[in-house]
Length: 464
Image (cartoon, rainbow, N blue to C red; front, side):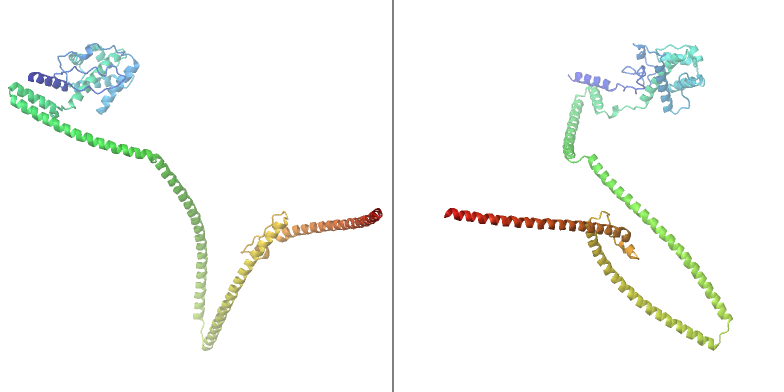
């Protein structure tokens, strides 16, 4: 029973040593898996294997003259050459003989054959050893750039390229059997079985089972942790479903940011306008400063001229006394001017205050006038609008009321007069009609009285 168990372990070991499949080259290439060896290779290079090539067993017929197949093959070859940063490549549809020769020499070098020149016999021997399913003659190798030899030569090159790529894959894929605990257990158990050390076999079985149980416990803990993480993620997912989505939150934030950007643009426009105004004022101030500087320069020149004149003139005591009196007179005039200016400033303040009160009164009067104009319904749409900056009555009232309001009022007065005359004439006519109606009523009353008297007489006669 133990031997049978060891035999099963050996079978599993053989299955573990099966090499991985090669990297696919191109889906359009019908020969992409043609270099895959059978399980149980004898060497890493798979170069001199005694096993027959899988390409010679049931090889599908490939339309090597098909243009699409040729282009796909050339792309695969060029991709491999470009991955190694080679200076040459095959240019479709018919590469040059030099590029084909360099490609074949490079492939032979990758297979372990280095040659300065392309040897046709060496190429044919290598293809024979590799059990190439395609036949190639020396004439195709001597003239590789001819149209009749190119399709078959291209098929051979793509076949060799895939073998080289698979060998590169094997060289670049180190074995990981040393890290496989099952492989170690199987190998050690089988060695102990061969030596007949049953005690070591049992100890190895117990240790391996203990390691398996520990690994199982770790996996169970990891599963529980993953389940807890799943529950947390599900709760988070539910909260995300119930709440606003990230897109909606981002859209709201985007809308707020767009509003802020609009506000900022408005502020920038206002600042630009303010900057232009400030710049204009600055230019005006610069011009005023230039004028002031020129005036100051002129005054300084005049002062210098006066100083020179004074220095040139001789000043006696009488001139000094006269100049002193003139200076005192100028100072008195300056004091009087300051006092007069203060008085005028007080008057200006009083006038400003009085003007303010009058302006408020005008505002109330304007409101009453506008209401009266609306009640009159003149049909001209005239309204008083006060202008505090006006200097004449017309400017203060805002409109030329003499040319607009007076004609309308005159027309309205004429209409009132005409209407009054018509009403007066109508009143006179109505009074005449009223007098006539009163006379008729009096006559009717007299007639009624006479009739009543007759009725009374008749009644008295009838009663007696």
